[in-house]
Every structure is written in structure tokens, then in C-alpha cells.
Image 1 (cartoon, rainbow, N blue to C red):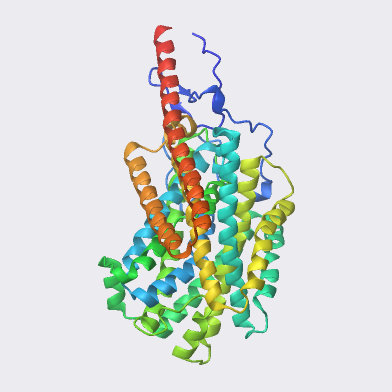
Image 2: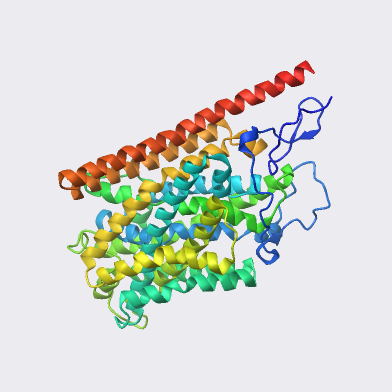
Length: 529
């Protein structure tokens, strides 16, 4: 019997054929074929060869190895930076100051929800050998692909403004106000050249830099935690006992809303490409997924502890005080200094060091994510330094404008931060819906398609997060939008926004039907022959 000339998914893993035990690749519709044959492989110094025993075949997943876990360690920690950016840090300090320890349970569950989405992102990258932006380019029509790219870039610019401003605030603190925020923005913008240099030196060098930055954050905020001595009993009660009051709803929404950042969903599926794993070898792919699950869980545990330190410090120092409602990223260091004084290591500068580490690490990962998003959606091939420069320019120009306009106004920066949070929240569906659509598609994922239970759980989490952000969006616009003309523009934008979400969801349903029909037709052909 000869197979009919149906094109096949090049990177899909193989699965056993039910009839004869041979391995066959999954058939896919002709229209969904990738056009990546011309795609260049990453430079050798950016890919770690994990399979030292690649000539050896396994009938099952290879046994666990601590040495191999160490080789897989890296992408998850780069991914975890998005949980520690200045926007998250500000959300932590405001939650602690306004709600005390009562929202720590929500921080824990929000981190677990974020972990689920990031594991699915890693899964699609390992199982297909391509990252999410590349897959979206191949699966969606051109107009939808361009619109998804635009949404991802908007979210990335919004996040980048927060991160760069956070770094600039830290530099202002550490220089005792000598450097204005706009100068800090210029200094921070040069990280695009640093990332290009470290990429050429090798992936491990880049990961080493992030290890230093994460360790700096952990040590800084742990030192503050030890210095302020929050109540351990209240801390554990806050983690274990769910509590939500009417006065803390806004802070609760902020805690949940920032766990999924659109650019990070795209980024993690690309970061796992730095470990060389053959997507056609089922046992090797499963082994990689197991190691990435362990590594990502450990990374987000570290990020949870850092966020917990920040929340607890401000809960101890400012919960129930008159400063609680006015504290923000700009004035937090000065409030800490007034509360706890100087000493050998003034808490103001410890805070500044931790904030600088958070800002710099997140701006570098943002630049990295921007490269993958632009190259993946638009199928652009260019020098890394040029790609990093273009990506950085998208964010630096509006950030410089913001820094000059809001340099002297703490209140204005807080309002700006709210607008940026809204901007990023609006983009979440355009990263999460494509992710869940692709990871539940058998013709893309092969045997690594997620099962019905996990799919339902993932969609439940995604809908919950989108509803939370929808509440934040509605609350913000109800308070800020005034006038008929502005209201009409907002209404028109909301209609277009919801229409595109409906299209993405309906596209998923229609594609599922066509794939099911194709698979049924293949079975009929196979039975007849």
C-alpha cells in the first residue's frame, strides 16, 4: 500500500501506528504547512547540546540525572524575570501597604496559574522545535498574523516603559538624585548591545548574567525582610487562609492581572530552543519537558519568595498608616528610609539595588522577547545586534517622551503606570488564545497535545485571568473616560477588540473541525485500502 501524497508536519513528533507498531508522523492539512525550510539554525554558541548519548536509543524516557537537569537549567529563570519586573514589584508593595498580609494566598495561586501557562509555552517549543510566534505565522491568515504581531509589540512597549522607568528610578536613588530619570532611560537603553555581546559569547554567559541579577534581587529584598522583621505568624496565615475585603479588590485584581505577560508567553517557547532536542524523538522530548517542568517550578518558587519578601516588608511598615494609599515605586524608597532609618547599609540603597536588578533584568528579557516576536511573526532574518536595536528603539522613543513629561511628578507616574497596566492587560487574550489553540492541536503537537482535562483547566485559568483584567479595564475606563467623543472612540475600540477575540476563538473551533474531518477521511482511506 502506498501513502497518498499528503504533506506532513516537519517538526511534529512521531507516534506509534496502532496497527503495526511502526512510527508515523501526524498528517496535517495542506494549508497549514510551515514555510520555514529556509529558516536559519541558531548559532552553535547559542544552543547547548544536551544529548551526549544521542546515538543511544531508549524505549522509554531516559532516567533522571542531576547533571542533565543542570544543563536544562536556564530558560525557566529567564522566563521568571517577567514575574519580578518593576510593575510587579510596585503591585507587591501596594498590596502589602493597602491589604497587609491578606493577599499572600492570592499571590501564591496567581504564581501557580502563571506557571501553568509558561509550562504550556515551553511544551509547544520543545514538541515542535518552533516558537509560538513562528507557529502563529504559519497557522493564521496574513491579516490576523499582522494584527497579533502588532498587539504583541504594543504589550511589549508598555512593559518596557515600566521596566526602563523602574531602572531609571533606581539609578536616581543610588546617585542621590543626581541623575534625572531621562538620563537613566538613556543609560538603560544600552542594554541591547550588552545582550548582543553576551549572545555571541554563548548562551550560558547570558544565563549567568540573569543568575547574578536574580541573586541580587533575592539578597536585597531578603535583607530588607530580615531588617524589618515582619510577623511570621501573620505571613503564614496570609498564605494559607484566603481573605478578600471590599477595600482590597483593586489590589487583588492587580496581583492576579500581572501574572501573565503577553511577551513572556512568546518568549518561553523560544528560550527552550537553546537546548538541542530532536522533536521527532518522543522519549527525548518527554525527558526535556520533565526537566523544564522541574526547572520552571524552581524558578517561579524563587520569584514567589522575592515577591513575598516585598509584600511582607511593606505590609509590616505601612499597612494601616496614612502613607499606605499614596505609596508607589517612585517614593517607596524614601518612605522606607523615613521608617527604618540609615544604619551601616541604608535600606534606601538596598531597595535601589534590588529595584535596579529587577529593572535591568526585565528590560534585557524584553529586548530578547522582542527579537523573537518580530522575527517570528514577520519572518525577518537579520543580524542580532540590529534586531535588538530595532526592538529597543520601539520602546525607548516613547519611554524618553514619558520620562521628560513626567520627570518631576510622582502622581503622574503612578497614573501612567495604571495606563500601562491596562495596556498590557488588554493584550493578554492575543497571546493566551493562540497558545491554547496551538498546544491543543494534535496536528501541531502530535502525541504531546494536551489532554482534555488539562485543556479545560488551562482555558478556565485563561478565562479567569481575562475576566479579572476585564474588570480592571472596565473600572479604569469608567473612572477616566469623559465626554461623548472619547466615549464613542472607546466604544468602537471595544467592539473591534471583542470581535477579534471572538474570531480567534471561532478560528480555533473551525480549525478543530477541519482537522477532525481530515483525520476521519484518512482513516476511511486507510480502511478501504
